[in-house]
Image (cartoon, rainbow, N blue to C red; front, side):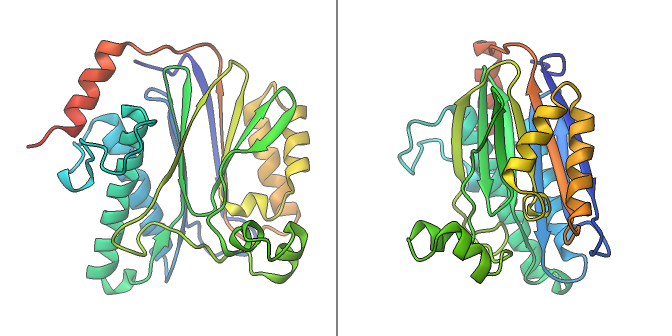
Length: 281
């Protein structure tokens, strides 16, 4: 099902004012309904490699260009999460496959040792946003003039807050912001957080690397989306401008996605697609 007429996408990525090159990978595929941001880390340009591998691995599998390897498949849903749809499991397992690619490359290529990447992806299917992430790249939802953070950062700051050691303000003041507790490529296995949320026409989903939210607070993001809600391209460029104006200390990636109309799935086509992606060789 081609979603390009159902969902509007905007994709802006900027090096920022301090970094010599852009290690983010931000992609959209309106036809299949995919938006993704990956924020690479580690070594000279190795972060670029990690984020690019992640983006390509997920995109190829969801497009149907390659089949999901047996090592990443969970035909029997071995983790016991029967609440996830087949499509949500496919998204999750495509990210697990991306982790394997990055980990193997980091092990085999000396220049890439220690590289990794965060990832945040939204896959639109059957009037649902399937949201998957690892690390501290974020997904927000803007609905009825309210902005809510959908993902929970896998970071030391967030972990200290969750455990009650600090308030959010204390954690921000006393803990380095860039210490992630989960990322792709660091270990042979990775846990991917996945959610499924019903969409409404007019929702705006914001995916971003921490180069945005470290520089621009949530209220300013909300006000910007409210002011420029009629023009997503202007909204995205304004968010990047605000991040740079506040210092631009990191690469800044902003992807916006807005369902224009309902997009119910053709059950027969989707079942056939999932079967093709997960079948053995």
